[in-house]
Image 1 (cartoon, rainbow, N blue to C red):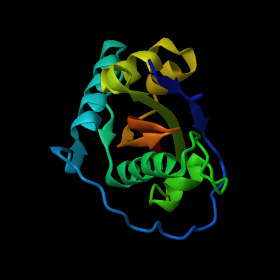
Image 2: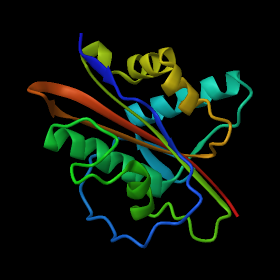
Image 3: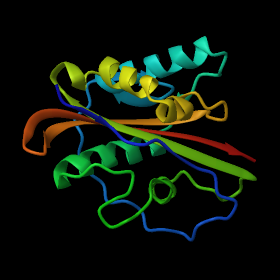
Image 4: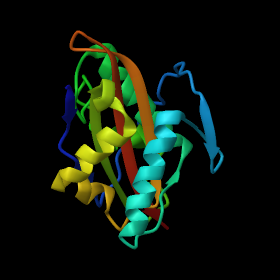
Length: 181
């Protein structure tokens, strides 16, 4: 019944950003699997499996979760719920690329740095990882980001809360990246 996806974005700059302040820590309840040393909640684990299955079906390498990207994605999903907005940009106007750098996905020491993001939300059967993933794959811009051959790293953030007056809404943020030395 309720579902929204946002335009997928890619960011592949050639210049480095200035050093940004570290994020303020926050609490998150995680029930989960540990994949590659990163603890993921059940919905994030399912989303990762769906993304890697689609990538494998297209002959692409699997992406691996990184703590810094997961922290950024979780914080963004929680922030969108708590402040009742839906955007790749923060309420203060910070881009997702700047957010990823601020959380530690640094450009320093790399000859190539590229990131992408997809966001979505849903309630009830439309808030499951499978439903959100199907919607992303039905959208050419989201599918293009998910199936980009450059990605090696991923961060997944899923938060549950109230959005636009609706309770029990799942908010998803998936950040992709690749850094080459």
